[in-house]
Length: 235
Image 1 (tube, rainbow, N blue to C red):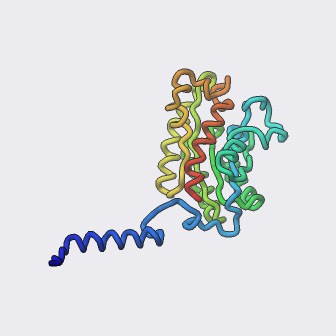
Image 2: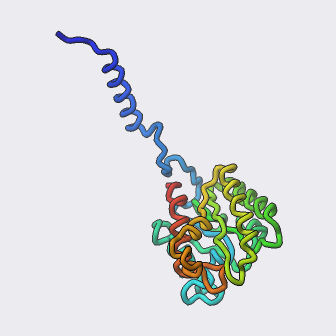
Image 3: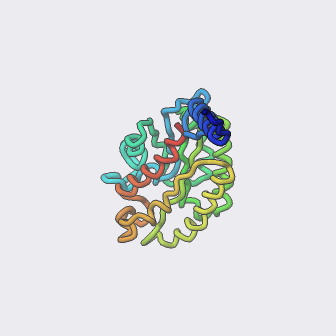
């Protein structure tokens, strides 16, 4: 004789309902382009906006900020290889966040990127932390108005002849992370990636150049890897 089991029926009903929701993609966050509106921008184009670290100074064989190095220096070409996206190197040596703010609209108009990576800046040392956060907040707003996804990066550590800059960097970075949380913006925590790296722990110069401020080739590779995760979540 068949005996109706209400508990078993309820469990089956829940399973069937969950299966239907999965099939429709409801209730699941994939970080895919189905939830990202890039507007008229090219989703396959990414711009790296920042200073000499974004440019890639002191990468292997890169001893100046000559335009001839732009396509091969720093994290941008490495991130391009890791992500399969076109990553434009829009770094400018010596730039601070106020100059980046003045330049971001031109970069967005020129390349129409789906994503912009924003990384400023030890050059803001004398401008103060609050000024940097204010400038970053405005850059986020400008990028979003353009339907370009902004991703912020924290500053890499400083040692050796630039060790005196580390106090500013360690004060600024938590505020950058807090701004990301407040604005709901993805963030690449380069400082954490560097200081937790086993090679860096053995010697900071495993990832930093001799000046103790700019990454070397291995450091730029780590930066590219750190950018990759928040970048690919947008697709």
